Length: 374
Image (cartoon, rainbow, N blue to C red; front, side):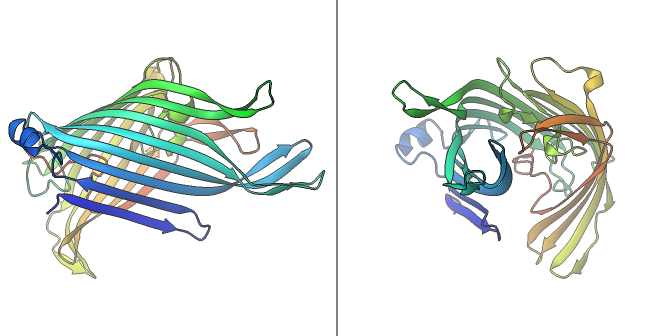
């Protein structure tokens, strides 16, 4: 039981945009030479193979001479991942080695050039091909108590190294014989990212104070913003949209105080059995930058609060509701290219942002948070 598993999903909307994924897990060690790997070496890894395909459609303006022509564009993202995970030292320490292959393409629909009344056939361009070798170490140790599902206390640490070999943004090149080929921008670099969460129990562990530090860097010369880290959005600084704070390097710090509003609700509504309700307040500080190091006065800040409600569906399945509200304390602007070729200025901050989730657990951004105990 649990030695092998297949998990997949598919969704298509009215615009025929699709989200597809398929994941295969093998948790029975090395499938050959078991006496050597398991009995003699004590090595019993788990393997995972996964594939993802996402398409999105949008509209863009194509400039052809004096004509500006609206065209439909379809983006197609295809990705395959292979990983091997295993324990080291003891059950608290985990390693994962992986390889990821990505292929992103865009397709222009058929359009007509009005000035010459000529129809141009649909075309497709593969604008990104990526290969990523990764090695991840993680440590997880949390104190067992009756509220650890909603108010975890303990430590989590994760360090991930990537070596990426990428081809990006092709250009058409015509040689002396008139042959047309695509020439890609090469992007090879090393990437390192770290994540530390430390939760301290207060008042007999019913309250908690947690500190979370995150950071990452791309080594070497500045890389295209396609490869940026993002310090904002729901996974990080919630007071700003995801693409607001990006760069080749980033660092953030979060301080959260969490306490119970009710720990024994004990009532049922529809299929939900209500168990406990927690409230937290938090603040973030951080920034993202390129080769020139950021200064303290350039750091962005936000504050917010979160409600966590733990219920069980049909008395069996944990169902975690979260409502989060965050306010960006700093106002700033970024310039982005637009589909018309012009630059667009977007202003962020000084506004409330709200998030709602309904999942099986709360800390889904921290892997294995409730699997490893002291």
